[in-house]
Image 1 (cartoon, one colour):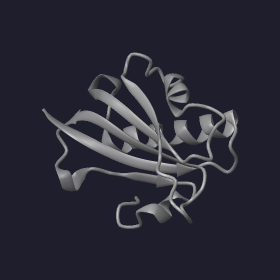
Image 2 (cartoon, helix red, strand yellow; image 1 turned 60 degrees about the vertical axis):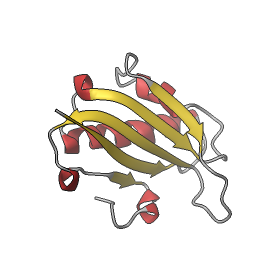
Image 3 (cartoon, one colour; image 1 turned 45 degrees about the vertical axis):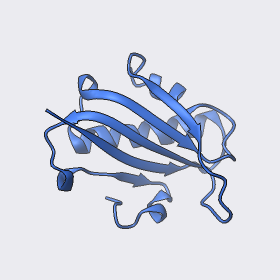
Image 4 (cartoon, helix red, strand yellow; image 1 turned 180 degrees about the vertical axis):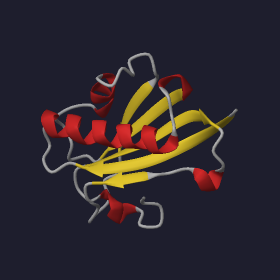
Length: 120
């Protein structure tokens, strides 16, 4: 089985734990469903957050989806002038039979503007 990277992003309407949980769970759930990813397929998940997000770690939210045994890590995104605010990005590494052109990258809640070429 091949290893693939699945990308996505979401934008929070406000920097708080409730919004973080809603947006991150929605993003991961859709990314897993569209790509046929089961928990046992997962290798690791990398999250980045723009510097204006300080309320919660995206990885903590991911653990609520029964991902506690999956290696998760968070990092701060570069602080670029005029960047889209309150954005969580994700890169999921997983085993998959999907070809490179068959991978679905998910961008939601305004984050579609980041990669209109990839947004599903």
